[in-house]
Each structure stands twice: as C-alpha cells, then as structure tokens.
Length: 366
Image 1 (cartoon, one colour):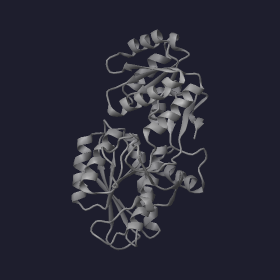
Image 2 (cartoon, helix red, strand yellow):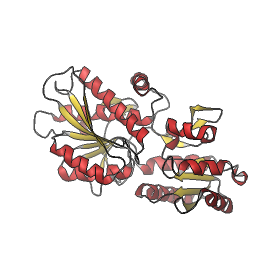
Image 3 (cartoon, rainbow, N blue to C red):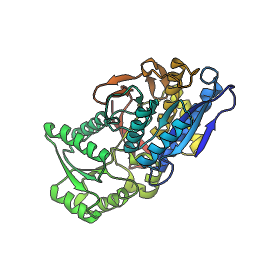
C-alpha cells in the first residue's frame, strides 16, 4: 500500500484512490504499467499547479485481480476521504469496484477494463476510458474475417469476461458466414485441445485464458503440432503486449494478433509521455501505461470543473475536455453500457513481427 504525490504545490492534497493488480494472480506487469502512467501524470499535474492550487496525491491499493479485495479497498479509500477512484485493469475486478463506488456515491474513472456491463444499472458516478468490449472485439472479428479466418475456435476459461467475449464473437461472426466453437481450456490438456482444433478444421484459435498459464503451454503445443501449421493464434485481450510474453515464448510468441488501444501515430504529447514512461519502466511502455496517464489527466480536468473546495468534490463527466496522449478526451452517455464513456478511444489489431519479435506491426485499426 503506497501513496504518491509531487511536492511542488501547496495546500491540502486532493487524494485519489488508485486500484491496480500489483501481485499475483493479478497481471502484475499490466498493473505496474498502469501505475507508472498514473504517477507520471500526477507529477506533471502537480508541477503545473495541481488542481485549484492543491496537489494531487495517489493512494494506491493492490487488487491482486480479486473482486472482494477491490470492494474492500473501495470501502477503505472512501473512509480515507478520497475525492475519486481511478485505475484497474481486470474487468471483473473493475466491475466490483464500480458497484461499490456507485453505492457510496464516489466518482470512479476506470482506466483499462472493457467489460460492457461494468455496472448493473445506469450511473453518473462511473466513467471509462477504454472502449467497451463489444466495440473492440467486433473490430477484432472484422480483422479475422478479412484475413479469411472464418472457422474460429476459442479456448476459454470460466469467466464473465471471457464468456462475454465469446458471445460477442459468435453473434458478430455467424451472420457473416463464420463459425465459432468454444473449447474448455481448463478441462482440456494442450494436446487434447490440439486434437479438437484439428477435428474442427479451425483456421484461428483465440486464447481467452490467463497468462502465463495456460496461455503459454497452449501456444507451445499448437506451434509444434504439424496439423495446425496454418492455424492463426490470436489473443484479443492483449496478452502479447507485455514483455514477459516475448520473454517466455520467444519467436513462438510472434504473429499473435491482439487488441491495443493506441492511435496509428502518437502526437507530440503522446511521444513526450512515451519517452518519460520508457525511462520510468526501463522498457517499452504498453498501451496500459498511456491509459494510466490519460486517466489522471481526465480526472484532474473533471475535478477542476467540479471544484474541490468541498468535502465531496463534484464530478461532471460531461464537462471534461482534455488532450490525452491518444487524442482529445470527452465523455458521453452510452445506453449500451449505462455509464459515461470516451467514445473515440483508438483501437488497433497488432502483432509482434515474426522477423523481429521486439517490433509491433499494425494489422488493422479504426
């Protein structure tokens, strides 16, 4: 449990609760990148005078990908008097945090989770930067169909998030002449899963599973099975974005398309922030690090508009208008998700270049 604030502004700090998976079984590298982006943005906001002359302070809590732990953290942070919540990467965890934030009347700007139904009912308390899963995964399905991959198998573990993804793919692909078959990644050993792929004559296998287990053993098995030489392996949830994917899989981890939320080309702000993040992380920043930065930038703008000279600062997401690293950020109400949403978040389908696995190739984008 940590707190982070820059030192160059005066007055009582405006405290922001920050949620991130920083220990296993959470995706630790994603949490580290998310936190690095948030910390950099806090530093820059404070160097520029803070919010209404007061510094921002992050009060960080590790969710470890556990919804109950996230709920407890939201309760604790509310008791500490934070002005708002930010962060989280895992959708099922963000959903739990959003529910508690709504119940407590605490503003929450979700950074990275994409599950459409992040809240059970419409709410003015919750906003989100990342695109909803239905939008991103339909873009991914368009890419698959355009590449002639219309016999799609999904290796899935039990999860609300994975089940939602499989449903989106099935409902989108079927009217366009494709098929989606679901395979139980928990019940089938990698070798048995390969047998199923060969039997279904699948042209693509999508990994709707955790990383590194069981994603890495599945990739090894499929890559080494001569019957499946022409099968494209995909990971729409973004597992290959992070360096540990390349470290564990090497060349076998290349050529696996995934969703990434970056524009085709970063503008001046994005390029500058990318350089700063690279120095902080000592590795290439992922799109999650940019999401972390943009979260704090947008939340600071919301707090300035709503005012912080009160016990419970008001947040009006409709008044946010700020330049982020990936474009101008504004929020609108979206009936399909019931919350405030940045509707124009960029979406790419990307893979690691087989000829140079440290380099990413943009395969499709909107």
